[in-house]
Amino acid sequence: MLRTIAEDDGAVVILDQTRLPRETAFVRLTSLAAAAHAIRVMQVRGAPLIGATAAYGVVLALQEGIALDEALAVLAATRPTAVNLRWALDRMRWALAEVPAERRLDMAWSEARAIAAEDVQANAAIGAHGLELLEALPHRPLRVMTHCNAGWLATVEHGTAISPIYAAHDHGLPVQVWVSETRPRNQGLLTAWELAQAGIEHTLIADNAAGLLMMQGKVDCVIVGADRIAANGDTANKVGTYLKALAAKAHGVPFYVAAPVSTIDFACAEGGRIPIEERAAGEFGAVHSPVANPAFDVTPAPLISGIITEQGVFPAGGLAAIRR
Image (spheres, rainbow, N blue to C red):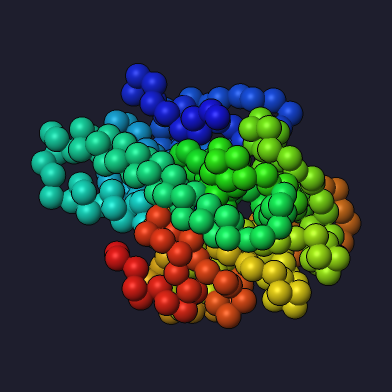
């Protein structure tokens, strides 16, 4: 397992995920513009990692002498759906607001490091709580379906939806993973790459094969990540998640969402208020027709069996019990 984000002599080093799985390459970020670009073009992906990168982007901006408010505005504009981005920027704002100018940079480094370290701890706890759910399922080997990439590549370490799978593997629970490819960016390939590195049995499938596999009784549970969870438990994740949730409901397959508490937007009442990012038509390649390319969809809370957080597993409609 590689570190997705690290420090290097005043710079921030990220694993360039746009070049995976063809090659493993790192990019050294030394400016606010570079950090914003890395988030926008998906060199870093996954809500928790986007948040950590944004926090370090504030640090880089302060090193350049850029005003805090300007840095926060630039980074906030990079991607609209993942709430961890805004959460991390708000946390940096609160941490730095009353700090004297001569101490602000040191405090920024400290807070960015804390955000990254807490992400590692939260994701490890998600794995432990998710493992308890997986152990309770009767079939062996356990057949888990996931969607998009919510492994360690999407976080600082461990992952969210894949963290329980790693925990199961480490505890000797035999597991097989159905990996949905997630068009048009094929982020499932990153999950497949991760699982191959870890020696976990897996099969890559086309997005639209998911319903058939559930109908055939070949899926014991579905675990996905989230980019934003509304207060009522409606959940935004990579487009195609909603269809999997519908299929899971129809065939009695448990459908879980795994995410840190920082992904819950208590200020957003329900899923219809979550902004859905529309990405460029060019991601489909050379086409000569109008293109719609929404990056996310919303799964209503009644379709979700439970939300796995670092604080435990909660019913999607019971998030008010979570400690903020």
